[in-house]
Image (cartoon, rainbow over all chains, first blue to last red; front, side, top):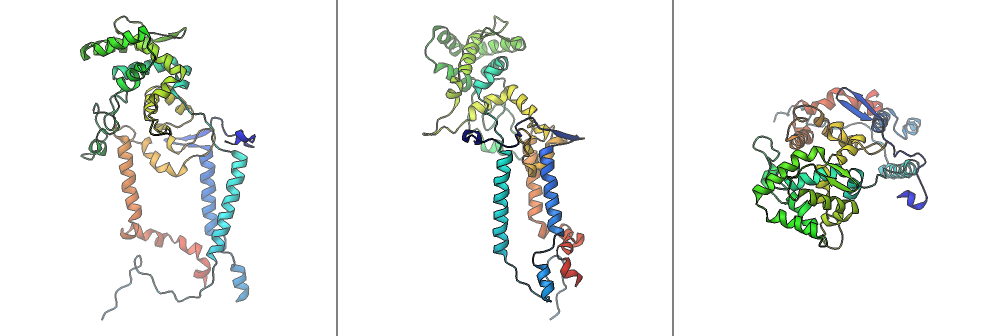
Length: 60
Length: 313
């Protein structure tokens, strides 16, 4: 436990969370942020160029 | 010999293009380093959930009435655990899906007699006190018919149970020794002695908290705390975490079924959800063998975005 070492979180998230409700779907803001980041990472993985592509082009 | 027709989802065409070197060890090492730095940084900034464990001592001090009512239900054999069925006892209908009922097949392998295990045994292990000993003897020597009559009287008076001046008040005179037993049980709980009495000691380390957890689950206090933190099954609780922390987002489909009928209203909901997920998991594992489903990646052509350099040549 970090507090035992005299260290605490810089941002304390130990408060009741915020939730978004849409019909039957209920999602916490924390989970929504993680999901958006995961989708963004997936899209970036699709669209970002492979490393070394520029070098290969230069070599051609 | 005739040449076999090319099957697009099964056969791989021979690759005749150019090859380029790629250092996968370097990529793996960079990925590990990035994850390590991110983990350390996020732990420093946000730390981790730090909710204190809920014990029977916590519960009985925070809501003595709920505790005493629940203890009475355990003694009377009318609590949810008392009537659950396998694996705890044979008093209820096991969860099933048609003829499939794994709980029933496995049988009672964690035997729990709530009256004995949660109330009578812990009280019997207390140092001798005349009033307690007399009440215990009265309960133990009574026939099951008499015990049921006391339990019925308690159940009728239970909604009006109060806790005043450290005493449980049950407004009935027909409940036999139950008021005395519940008073001692509540005192024991508030001191923390009941937590110790209910933990099963397996060897040197104490790791089996089955009994105190089942006892806690029968009250409304624990469910109330879970409700505030959006951790109930009906609140997509499986994918949530305490506080504002993100939780197990990957369990979204598992917990989704608990929100819709018939899964949300079935008495065998847990087993139905598990069975549904097993069927869906089998479908996912068997994708390469399922015509139509295995064609989806080829038809939606996302691979062409990833390998766009190759396909533009």
